[in-house]
Image (tube, rainbow, N blue to C red; front, side, top):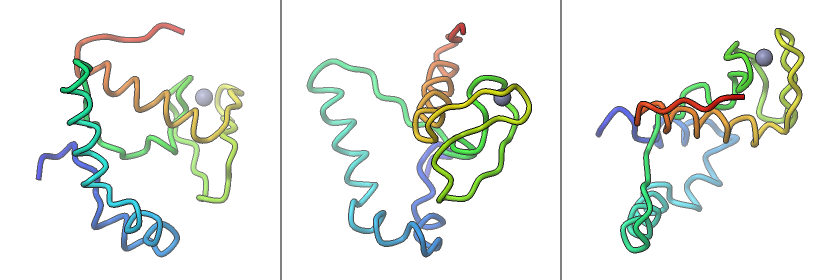
Length: 105
Ligand SMILES: [Zn+2]
């Protein structure tokens, strides 16, 4: 398995995540995303999910939070964002960095 793949086995061991992940079937989901990316001529990039929820997308510092904490509040730079949007920004940044691109702001 390439390093960038989602750690499905590890995530399923987390009892809070296991049911939803098993229901969705991440491997199948990823195959769909890649299939539709090819079909519509869009680039798809798998990135390591490590720390995408924990790191601040504004300053890069780690901000530990439990799964129930839905708002990212950075004690380092003061950045406040919805947890999932903060993670999405980190994921986008990781994907762009594999292309040699860096977002500004
Ligand atoms: Zn920050």
